[in-house]
Length: 178
Image 1 (tube, helix red, strand yellow):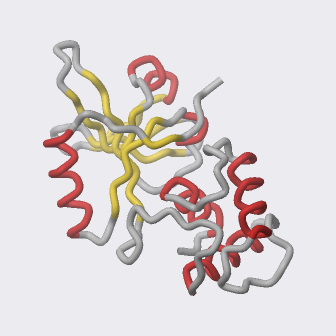
Image 2 (image 1 turned 180 degrees about the horizontal axis):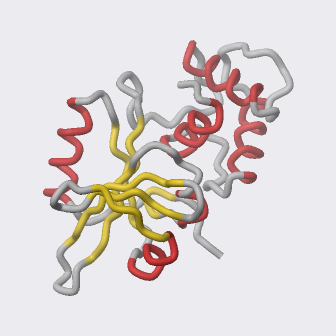
């Protein structure tokens, strides 16, 4: 069984600084985490797989999930190549960097008691997916928290009832709405 998605501290300080600078220049927030391929395959946006070389240095592979159990990857020579997920599963240890399009609220974890238009948007997403049965109010209330927990449980995310980067990425992926 694959592990659920969870944040990780990848130990890639210099590399993460460069990746963060490039991503932020494009209005994206990089989020480093550990993920199983079963969950990662649900994301259609590109991501970076992090490998450890035999000498301990990190190596990066830009990838995008394709239908049929394959990944499109960009090699160092910038040529596109297709790899089997089975090959990746043998060589990869679960570290990945996802890119989230959230210029206004990077890294914020939304929870009970918070309010505003962004909460209204989350409630609309939860409604669209059938997790919240009440109309959006813009208030992160106990009903919203319960809906978030059900969503997290169903998608094998850490169940804490808060909407952090991973829950937001999955909500956006499944609804197509930011």
